[in-house]
Length: 119
Image 1 (cartoon, one colour):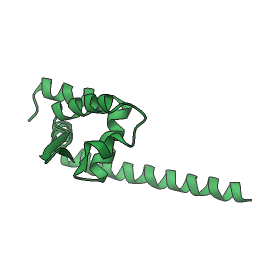
Image 2 (image 1 turned 135 degrees about the vertical axis):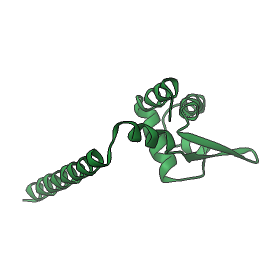
Image 3 (image 1 turned 90 degrees about the vertical axis):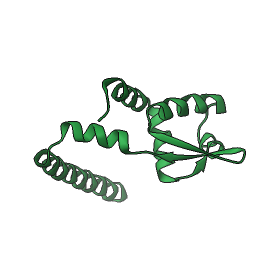
Image 4 (image 1 turned 60 degrees about the horizontal axis):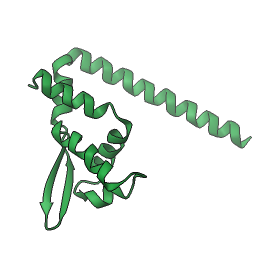
């Protein structure tokens, strides 16, 4: 279980849009290098390194030295621990059902807009 300080670090890390985008990229490309990650952002490599430090301190990103490079990996454990703190089996079932309904409605709306724009 995460203590309050660890949980604060996770929420702080996720509170920033750039860090969430970095986390998305690392999750989508396990083992990507810091240089590859930095290349996808319009900020300095130093700024990317500062954001990575926050993500690593929160335990959301794990880095592994590979020669002169650092490879980055997403660690879902802190998010899972937060999820488990407040979710029960019952609430997880219903929140999953509501989430699927939300995605279906959004997809239907998106398709409707595309068809409307064609016509």
